[in-house]
Image 1 (tube, rainbow, N blue to C red):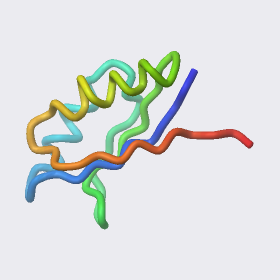
Image 2: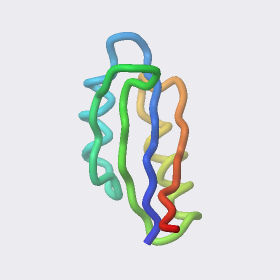
Image 3: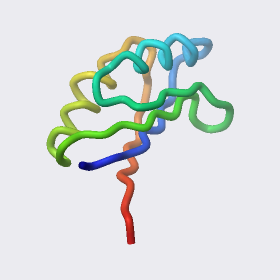
Length: 77
């Protein structure tokens, strides 16, 4: 299982709407609108890195109102 945090920037005033929409996407375990340089932080999981990439590109980046994403895979050292 691969887990990641996805940091999202949205259009002005769209953070809550984007977080609400993304929270219903399969593979997303948490979606919160926040303050700071990013507007939404998502925690997601997938079976492997390829599926995580597909989740981000096909499902999350497709949400209207998102302007940029940064995917941060979780590592256990």
